[in-house]
Amino acid sequence: MKRFLWTAALAFWGWTLRGAEPFDVAVEGPTRGDPLILQGNFTAPASSGAPVLVMIHGVGSTRAEWAPLVRQAAGRGWGALAFDLRGHGRSRATLAGKTVDYEEPRNGRNPAFWETFPGDLEQVIAALEKKTGVAQGQIVLVGASLGANVALDVAARVKGFRALVLLSPGLEYAGINAEGPMAALATPTLLIAAEPDLYAFTSGERLRTLAPPDLLTWKPLVMGTPQGAHGTQLFDGHLEGKILDWIARPPVKKAAPKKSPAKVKRCRFLVF
Image 1 (tube, rainbow, N blue to C red):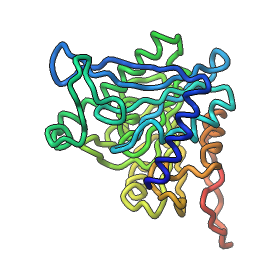
Image 2: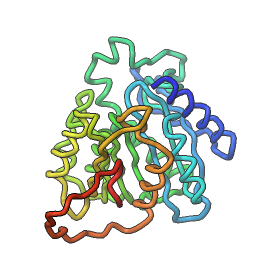
Image 3: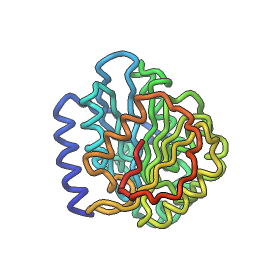
């Protein structure tokens, strides 16, 4: 896991040197009048109207985990915004210099701390639209683990996003529930989880029964990668492209396949 994060970090900082600009957003801090600064990086799309990915990482990680997806999105001329969540990475300081760390018990063990995450994401999106002119219809929310639940929560309440991609969501992470938001979904959604990641996989099986069938694409994986089976650990150089291919084409409601007695060979990723 550490090797994966280090490799992703190197790739990420390489990305920041190739045209990404700092993108910082002030959100409410623990003390009124002293905002917390969420730090991120933004790469503008090559053309107006191109998709723009807004990526939300999981607990204990940073924006660096999105480097493989950002790299392939940039190759298509798409925009990308990745930021460190409250108390993570470089988003650990208020304007006055006070430290905010998710690992501190007063934060990590406090449900109110995690409840701020959806609101933080909404403020990041609002800042993105205001500062760059990106339209909401261009934005694709992409979340992993806790970030998937945060993205789903926002997409269920704020309509008009281009698409939603959920990697290894759970029925509940850090008090952020997924069942209600999934039932209220109004955005085309790609849901991915791997069988070895038992909690995320069984959560995915449950969540797919709640979403409107014409909006949800459920893609179960039968195995993970050498890095693991959760969230962005599933990136293998191929999955990233499949995700982008799904975003690029309009969702089509598929007819139910006819039953066949023939056995189907299982592969890691079911064909999109």
